[in-house]
Structure formats: structure tokens, C-alpha cells
Length: 157
Image 1 (cartoon, helix red, strand yellow):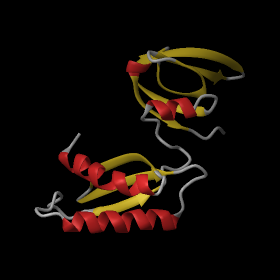
Image 2: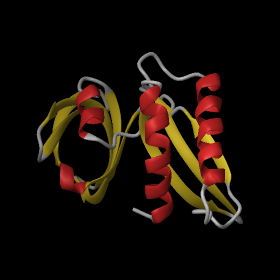
Image 3: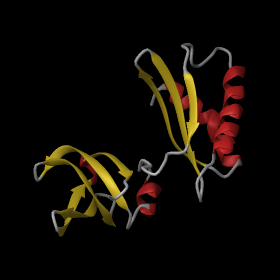
Image 4: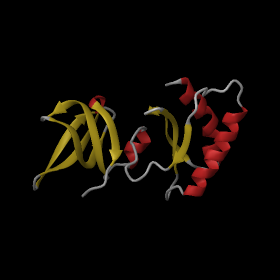
């Protein structure tokens, strides 16, 4: 974890905890010529724009008060909801997603594919099982969790 993310995590955690929000993810990424510090927050029933603005304002105050500046380069601060396709990062995220439609990306191909979508049927520490639809048939496929590069909620079409 980069020192910027560690510092921001330490600063934003008390803010979101006090408001009973969940800190979903923090990214500090360069896109083109610009740097972005993205904070994703959520709560039961969803987060709204005023709550995102509140956290952004409070975090900005804390970042501005630090000397030396932990982020010396110019950057854009974005505080938002993780959206409908929320990433699954923590064990609690996976537990909440049981029975939900999710998308996974794999490090290594399974049956010739590196990406799958389906309903999260079962979950253990080592594996997860998705019920996937292949043409008109449903099939359960079990994946080694160590082979999952990314996972997120998905919208079924």
C-alpha cells in the first residue's frame, strides 16, 4: 500500500466512522497527466451527494493541515459511491454478495475464459462457486479465490 493511501486511510477513517459510513476503497492513480485521489464510501441504503461532499470537505481540511504535504503533486480529490457495480474487496463484501449477480476476473484461464459473471452461490475461505448461464443452460463453476484478480457486483442483462 502506498504511503499516500496509508495516510489518507488514517485521515478519512475517523470521518466515515463518525458518520456510520463504510470506507469501501481508496485509489491514488495517474490518468493521463493528472493524478486522482478517489475515496469510495457507502452506507446501508446508499450514499448521497451531500454526504460525499461532507466527507470531501472534512478530508480536504485534514489534508491541508498536514505539514509536510503528504501529496506533493497536484491532484483531484473525488469522493463518491462505489456505484451499482461495487467492487468486492473485503470478506464482508463477499458475504453480503451471496446470492447476488457478480463479475470476476481471473489471473489464469478456466475453461478458456478469464472473466465470468453469475450468481454467487457458495463461498468458503479458499473457493467460491458461481452459477453461470452458458447459452440456455445453468452451470455451477467453482473458482480458487487465489485465482481471482478482481470481483465486483454486476448488473444482469
